[in-house]
Image (cartoon, rainbow, N blue to C red; front, side):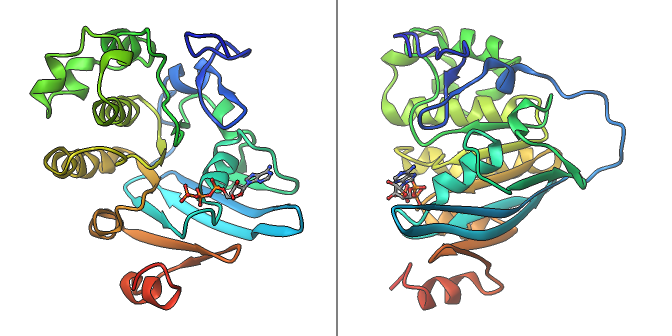
Length: 253
Ligand SMILES: Nc1ncnc2c1ncn2[C@@H]1O[C@H](COP(=O)(O)OP(=O)(O)OP(=O)(O)O)[C@@H](O)[C@H]1O
């Protein structure tokens, strides 16, 4: 990857060992041809290495109008699962479908999804407004809930603090014209007062998007999410009583 963060596909930083093609972020949503909701499903996802089964026949579902949370202990495979759904990590037999139609790799489908990796996404040299333009996003609208970010929009991303950078990345992807956003630890480093506002923004965006996120700020995840999954010993379990499930599975004490 060159210093500007572009990989050999001419893309932004993305999946581990994979540069998300710019097209993943730039393609706009085609005119609607079906009534909402759009349903994104992944199933048959299996992944093992070194004798350890990380993902064992996982199924998950997210639809527009929902925020779906993915929780699990460190190293259980949440990032690997998001990368697989987005299509950056190929897994034998994995199926990802939009309203029943196979979409593999999903990131190549125009306007379907964007993906925030756990590592920084935006090239350091790019200004926030230039990054927004690249994503087809109105920076003013995306940052409107955070006046202090608007004041910094002319600055290169590399000059922003870590938490501010994360916040900018999440806001730009949420406001980009895709039906789904997959967010790996969107709350990392974001200070509490901004986190409250970010949760409000997520709620405001939800009616027009499906959002799949993973983050260890579980209180925010539980308060925000319509559906909570727990990844545990390679199995993905949909929790009817999330707090009890997290206690039972040793995620909480
Ligand atoms: N191809 C691979 N070869 C070896 N190890 C791998 C490979 N892919 C993933 N892993 C390991 O699998 C585990 C799961 O990683 P992953 O980042 O998906 O976990 P996570 O649930 O997102 O963790 P965290 O909550 O700490 O972010 C880690 O121990 C990682 O090092």
